[in-house]
Length: 408
Image (cartoon, rainbow, N blue to C red):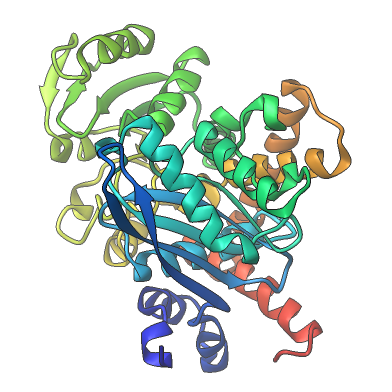
């Protein structure tokens, strides 16, 4: 593979928008280590099927690399490189002693039986275990992976290395060394950041709209509803529901569990496009990337956009929203709660001392609040977006570490 194949083109574009120095762009547009594997898995039918997997360790200047493993039919090398790059920035912004990594297998897990899924998970770890370890690279769950899959992966890793090593993988079941609070860490961390943003903007108990009603969107909705926030719009992948008087989230979750969708619930049925353009104070994209783009950004009416999804706002839309004075809390800050509690899990595993849920959430709150204030102050000083400020803070930390290591 030559350098032109290994360059992260999305990262190159993002870097050029965020920093001026060409040497920094050049240094960070390539991942430090990339592994592409093809491996066999025996299916329930008795036939053997080949799968492609990836693990990218983007930068390890600040510490061992950290990042999730996703199972998705359309995942590719460029996507994994980009996600590993963003993890590097995310860890730096949050002040974690980690670099960034990401892993993936090109597969539709919905087409596999549970036994096939376990065999695939274990086979993938057998292919990449040599570059993993609690002081080297620590995986975690991501899209279409969960605590059970992490448990299988850890078990396979420990079988290969011949010892118990709970800190090698995070996001595990509690019985295997997982941390309390990990299941709600991403939405809870995002809400801690949102509260700080509302405080900075002097806004209380606003009207909220949430795009996406999966684990993260539903979790955020439940937390906000329990705390008295009025949620006027919710959508899933099919459609949305709007009620200016507020949606009963507890009842909506029951409706979703029963029917598999939010449509049909009390209120006006609306499209995802209409939902994004609702008149509200806070808009939380918690679904797919590129949902707010140059063609609809001018129609966004929210005062705050909290990115709980990865890259839901395009670079062109970012510029439009900034001119409209809409505060966008970037994904590398807003949805970092998961990696923060993964870090807490890693620390607990290494120390063999485990914390209560209250301790975990208190520590998470402090981490998220500090990171938000660092980014917000930097953005005001630079007179720029919070995304560019977050990138600048993260890149400065990474490059300082590279300089201290004698690499620059």
